[in-house]
Image (cartoon, rainbow, N blue to C red; front, side, top):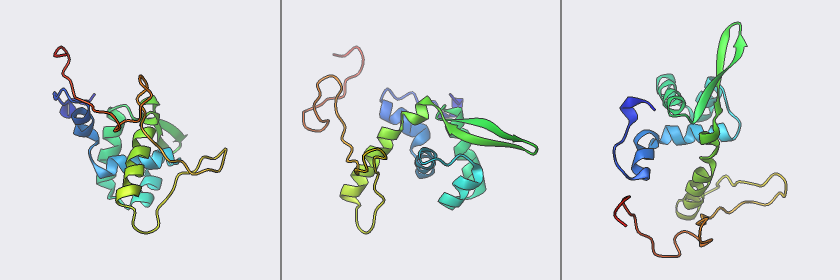
Length: 147
């Protein structure tokens, strides 16, 4: 992990947002999940300044969500591919998108479709332990050792 991005806050949400709480980073991860891998592809999709794109890609790479892979030796060119941590971020993106559809859903919106069934997905968050939908039961945030 990049030393400048270390967050001492015990809250995992704060730790994640310390390096990821930026619109460009989330949109880069979205685009990586739809198959973009190259600098120019990201730049064209997002209309982002090259300096900002370079910094965001470097941070996502340093934090282990993307990795660089050489796709051309002459001239040397690298692409950015999702790591396991990056792939595991997809449900988070889907939940942000579901919230956005519900509360910021004016106009035409992109929908996510299951390729195998053709059905549009409607993501929900479920607690793996209880099977309950998150948000339907009272919750509390507990510091380790205080329970």
